[in-house]
Each structure stands twice: as structure tokens, then as C-alpha cells.
Image (spheres, rainbow, N blue to C red):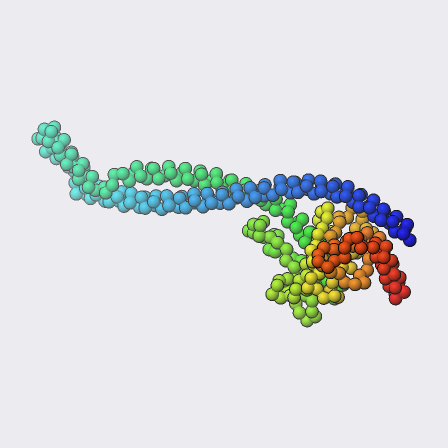
Length: 362
């Protein structure tokens, strides 16, 4: 028996060395895929920032354009009012002094009887009177200036709209690639999660929040929600510290982590004290599912290592053959058995006796 045990230990040591080599390969793959992921994320963030900047500039140009249009309308109204006043004055002048009727009289009284200086003086007086008919001679210049300004703003606005449309198209193209993958991943997780809960006579579901087809939502607002039901007659409720007990939250979280194993690639996984707060029934059930998910015959040779760190374990847990499980007990503290008194032989004999007793009971 000792020889067989030592051979098993040597075999396990060989397997550990192989696992360490594969762990290095997995770490390399993990770093490679992490780098590719990090390269993709900035392009999404840059597109979102460009879109926000374009929208902000477009809003500023729209506000400035609206203000210039308002000023232009006011100026045009002033110009139209002054022009109407000038036209009224002209019509009144024509009606009171028709040019054809007073042409001869003008030539006789103004040209023939007056010298050139007098005529120029009267022309100046008439020009002064004409100036009084127009409130502001700068209206025409202001009108032309504002018209040019509006044309420039219109060109800038059109350019900003084109850039905004390009940014929206880029985001839409990325979203069309991203949305189906998110929906597929969430559906796979939810199906696996619901399967675990059905085996417990309960109900569970994983949802994407908000809906991936909502184009108004930024990427950083997306997430996954866990919905569970542990009792008959109740509805599915979102997992939170206000609705479920500590044990129920631990079970729900652990089952979610087990579901993630099928869609993520990592060299190893570490779970610390997940069984704290669970009753014995749930703790035994969770441990059994962890063992089954990590067994070589279920997960294959390329499966990552799984570390379960806990201050305690239930007695009589099942460790099936071929599961490649190692139990490491850390003795560190006051009152612990000294290292020189540790007897591996007696420990192995006790394990074999307990195993034979369990087989007889079964």
C-alpha cells in the first residue's frame, strides 16, 4: 500500500509539473488576449469622446447661428421699416410736387434765377432732410455683415454635422458587432444558471441591463443582473443584500462564478470562503458542483486550476475518482501539531479506513 501511495504521489507530482507548464502557456494566452482587448477598448472610447465633442460643438454652432439669425431678423425688420418710411416720404414728395409739373418751374426759379452756389446750398439742405428720413445708414452694412457671418456658420455647421454623422456611423458599426456577442453570452450564462437552479428546485436568470439595442446608452452603463427565486409562490427578484439572506446570496454568487467558467479562459481561479454563511445542505451542494465542474473527465486536460480557500470543510465530502483533487491543510498557529510529530503514514491509514467504512455504508 505504501508503494502504491508513493507511486500515486509521484504521479501527482508529474501531473503538477505538467500543469505548471500549461499554466505558463495559459498565462501567455491570457496576456495576449488582454492586450487585444485593451487595444479595442480605446477605439470605442475615442469614438464616444469624438461623438460627444462633435455634438457639443454642433450645439454651440447651432446656438450661435440662432443668435445671428435673430439679430439678422431684427436688423431686417429695422431696414424694412426704414425703407417703408423712405418710400412713403418719396411718394408723399411726388404727390405734393410732381416732377413733370414742376420741371419747368424748377428750371425757371432754381436754375435760371439762382446761381450755382445757391443750388448747391439747397441740395445740401435737402440731403440733410433726406438723412432724417432714414434712422440708421449703417443698417445696410450690418445686414451684409450678418449675412456673410450666417453663411460661414452654416458651412461650419454642415462640417460639424458631417463629422458627427461619421462618429455615429463608427459607433453604430462597433455596436452592431458587439450587441450580438453580448446577447449570445448573456443567453448562454442564463441557460446554464437556470439549469443549476432547476436542480435545486429553484429558479434563476441572468439579464443584460439595459437592453443592448438601446443606442442612447453608453457602454459603461451596461451590466449583468442576477434574478433568483428560492421559495415557491414568490416571483423572481433581483439579487441584493436587502431581499436575500447571506446564504442565498453566497449560493447565487457561487453558481454564477461556476457559469462563468464555461465562457472565460483563465489559468486558474481562486474562491475565498465562499461557503461562509451557508447551511450544510447548500454548502455540500456547492462543493459537489465545484468538484464536478473541475473534474478532468468533464472539463478536459486544458481546464484551469481551481483553488477553494476556506477555514473549514464539511465531513464526508465526496471526492470522486479522476477528479484530480488535492486537499492541502495549513497548520499555522498556537496549539497546532508540531511538524516533527506529523505522521503521514497514520494519516493515510485513517483516510483508507474512513473510505472503507463509507463503501460498506453505501
